[in-house]
Length: 325
Image (cartoon, rainbow, N blue to C red; front, top):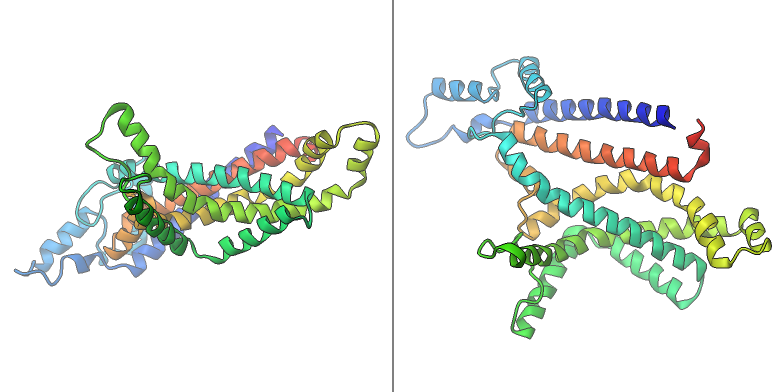
């Protein structure tokens, strides 16, 4: 299994490099950082604009491959360059990475765990009211775009707080900077509730449908009936044999769901005023900030491929055929 995981890790590193390089090339050829300096009053001399853009490695007059080589050599040493206004991309990313990771990790893991549980319950109780309720709810949630769901949650929470006369659940921002210590910790958790719900609901619905179908396929297999025929309790046979086997496809989908989660986080961060990587991506595109867009794409590629590697670990732990390959 060790060789298999090392091989997968090496492939993921190569894929991160390819994804980041293509993202930089696309951003550098389609964005116009020069527009941020042109049209100012009083006008800025073209020589000054060129010198400024050269200092930030954003000058469109410089050949693309030369700009890419400068950017890539910096990334190798951990330097993602300058923003369109001369700020440090590393410093900006350092402030925003943990904001997004809080949402992505909690939302992904919560969505995976609850989705698998609900899917398994739905399969075991096939055609019963609970199965139908989970199925209808899942399809309704999957039909609602993330930004609509997040907006509805924010509006509903605002009206709830207004009806109660006090703030039960925070619906905007990351935390209250006026608080400190334990109070700020609890306040951060309160601010985390709505964004996490808006992200994890779609994952819960998605995994519940996959897990139900996989579980139904496994429940009819001979090895499950044989385990119960040998005297194993039904609950033990379902969890130890049926659920473990049915988990393999869900674990495979884990990486793809993480990619979808990052897309949803972009809308969620903007709606709930979280200053994470998703919100930074939107702002960077609007500002023609090539280096920042490339940095966010690099982060997204690392997250998705890290989820892919975790998916490989889960599959290797669940499937003995992988461990001996």
